[in-house]
Amino acid sequence: MVFGLLKSGLSKIRRAFSRTRSILGEKVRDLFGKPLDEETLDELEQILYEADLGSALATDFVEHIRRFSRKNPGSNSKQLIEAMKDHAQEILQKPPSVTGKDPEADTPQMILIVGVNGSGKTTSCAKLARLFQQDKKKVLLAAADTFRAAAIEQLDIWSKRLKIDCVKGKPKGDPSAVIFDALTAAKARGVDTVIADTAGRLQSKTELMEELAKITRVTQKVLPEAPHEIYLVLDATTGQNAIDQAKIFNQFTPLTGLILTKLDGSAKGGIILSIYHQMGIPVRYIGIGEKEDDFIPFDSESYVDALFSV
Image 1 (cartoon, helix red, strand yellow):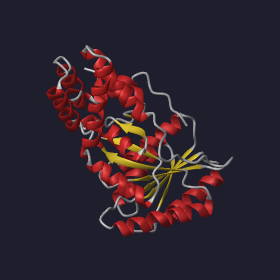
Image 2: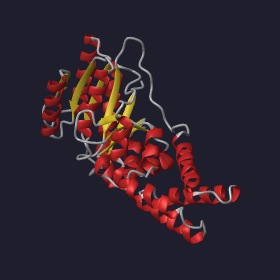
Image 3: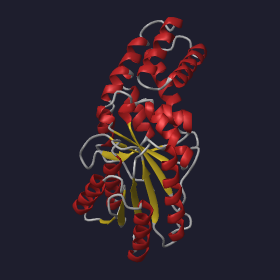
C-alpha cells in the first residue's frame, strides 16, 4: 500500500535532516569548490563517514566521484553534488533483499512491529495505525509488549485517542496469546489491518528468538501466511548501532521493512543509506517529530534531495 506524502512532506523532511545536511550537504558543497585531488577526496570520505554512511559506503561514494570526475573533467560543484545524489538513488532503487506478503482475500493484513525498548516502537505502532486509518482502513492494535505494563497503557491511550480498537493482555502475560486474540477478533470484525506491538528485549537473544518464533507459529494458526510484514523500529540517533540491531533481529525473523524514528534530533541521517547498502532492507516510514503527523512514508527522492541540499 502506498500513502501519498502530505504537501508539507518535503519541507518536513528537509527540516528533519537539517543537522545531517549541515554536516553533509553544506560541507560537500564547500569541498567541491576546491580542486578535486586526492586530498579533497580524503576529506570527502571523512565527511561522509561523519554523516554515518559507514566506512564501506563512504569509500564507495568516493570511488564513484573519482570515476565521474575522470569521465567528466572540469565538473563544477553542482554537477558533482548531482552525481552524489544519483549514486544515492541508485543504491536505494536496488531491489530489496526481502518483501512482504499480500493477505488472502477478505482476511486482515498483519504487521508485526519489533525493536528495542526506547526506540519509539509503541508510538510508531500508533502513528502507523493513524496513517492506515487516514487511508480509510479499519485498523486494530494488539498491545503484545506484555513485558512492559507502560507499553500496554501507552498503546491503549493512543487507541482511545484514535478511536481504534485495541486488544490487550496482562502484564507479564503471553504476547502470542494477545496476538492470537487480536487476529481472531480482526477476522470477526472485518478489520483490514492488525498492527502488533512486541517486547523489545535484546539482553537474551535466545529468549528473543524463541518469542518471535512462537508469535509466528501462533499467528499462522489464524492466518497461515501471517505475519505479512515485519517492521523493525530503529532510533536514528544511535547511528551505526542501528545496523547491529537490524542484523540481530533479521537473524531471528526476516524483516520486510524499517521504521526510522527521531530523525529530527539526529545528525546521522546517512544511516538510511548505510543500512540499505549493507542489508537491502527498505525504510518504509520515518519519524520526524513528536506530533501525530510527523510520521510519514519514506520517499527516497525527497530523502536524497534533503540530504545533499544546502
